[in-house]
Amino acid sequence: MKLLEERIRRDGVVKAGGVLKVDSFLNHQMDVELFNEMGKEFKRLFADKNINKILTIEASGIGIACIAAQHFGVPVVFAKKAQSINIDGEVYSTKIQSFTHGKVYDVIVSKKYITPEDRILIIDDFLANGCALEGLIDLVRSAGAAVEGIGICIEKGFQPGGELIRQKGVRLESLAIVDDMNAETGEIKFRQQ
Image (cartoon, rainbow, N blue to C red):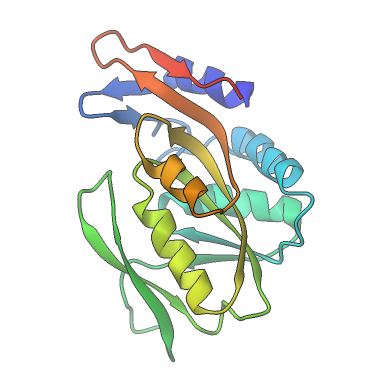
């Protein structure tokens, strides 16, 4: 998606350690018009799938998942990183490791919101090592539901997550794939798609 690549080039900041900061438009301050275009693109990419629910993980995936859900006309469920008193009943649970935060989280979804009848599109802002996606796939499959695909805003193609998920046979569509970044020069190279 050229629009997203142009925005990453213009406003993204490359930091040491393989970090790409896009907080000015994607995961802190959100450019809703850009999100709308990304949501349209996810709908186009997965138009052949009978998706009835979108799943994401808190917090950065929620914004894009909600905008994309408007294009699909379906609800969004987000996996929570902590049990709270307002989650009643049984939950699906898995552990995920966050590349950004360097922490392991217990991630939960109430069993009321994912059922065996669900055909789910997983949406997230970033894909690095694939740990969060593996956890979400595990949650969906634990419920007996189907993962119809995964939509990612920005994939770090130089990290193993994309290859790992694709090897599992899950359809993965990334709107922008960064193949290389240079923290000294700020240069970002995108994969041709």
